[in-house]
Length: 312
Image 1 (cartoon, rainbow, N blue to C red):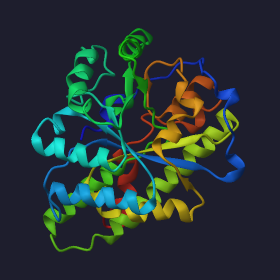
Image 2 (image 1 turned 90 degrees about the horizontal axis):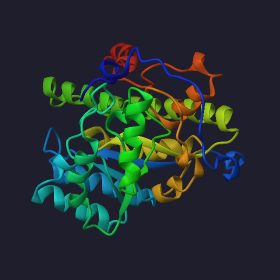
Image 3 (image 1 turned 180 degrees about the horizontal axis):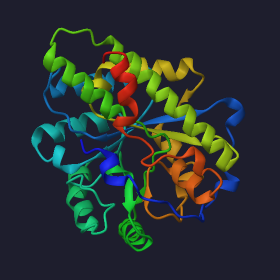
Image 4 (image 1 turned 45 degrees about the vertical axis):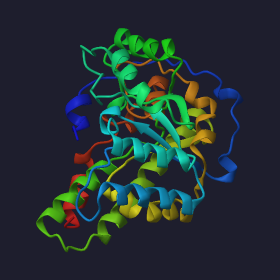
């Protein structure tokens, strides 16, 4: 996976904010934070320990065991075949939402963003047949445009197609934990993998606490959050532990459709570059929280020292 630091590092964010409807949003802060699971890419290939079918079944079983419905933001190139279509059918049959993540999963945050619309349109027919498909779109790498002009072009491409930005409020580097896990398994096929699950839970809870705290300061409330994770071996192995970890930490797990109904997802922060989690963008647009923001918001190198120190 491309390193976000290479894509986003060094980009300064501007100020001002356009947020629609947040003042009337229900405030669940007193009840404790709420989070929905959103899973990106659907690159469900065979690999170490599990083939693709087993991985997908493990993810579905974990969500079913927790009694929640997630959202899958699907990159078309990974499901443009009979096997991929079967995975989507099983996902939809279980009641989980499906949204568009482009076909190619290209980086559209650069100075020459290319034809995002064509990439969206190429993915659309692959996900259209399923009853749980919704007009949701997530930008690859959470990158919406380097300049205000390109950002507005990207947002217009969504509006022209009746799509809503399926923002992430809690970003993280689960993909990096998975990368390190797979590297270890290549070197030590029988190695102890449990510590990777423990680290993943701690990492996700740490980032969730950060973004929820930031949201409370920016919005004055805790919104219905969306956690970004990817369809990886680590997710297949450790999702039950992740979900239980959130519950043990006082989080309520909610359905993705419930989360996306929160008015915060109507926000269009007036910043350029437009990237990172929605909460990061809103905090940057506010102008009072720059000391608490890093760019990119999340990336593997931030987690490397801790994982190195643990021998992971």
